[in-house]
Image (cartoon, rainbow, N blue to C red; front, side, top):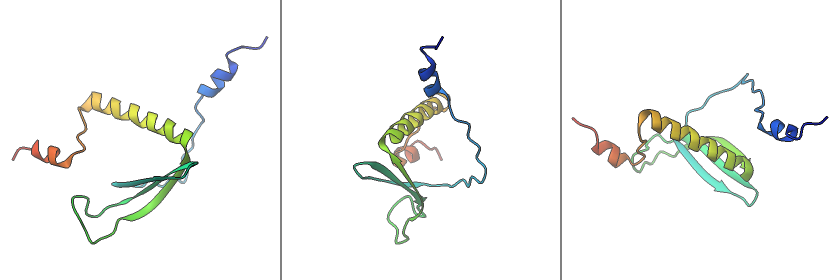
Length: 104
């Protein structure tokens, strides 16, 4: 007898991921652009993240995903950020506010 939940169970399973040959990158810069079918994320290193610089940002990695994957990624990132803030407090992205909160 077939289980009526089998297709749903198959969708919820996570694939096994083996990160052989994985090369981690660090980025403090992300540019987002899109086409009607895809979202394009360029990652790089901004050597002068606090102000204008004559040194260009070197984009070293590009991630291209469809909008379904992008939405799942946005949801997963949101959950990860929420958990981090619950454990460690709010993440202030305004550098002026972060700098003002420091004591000498």
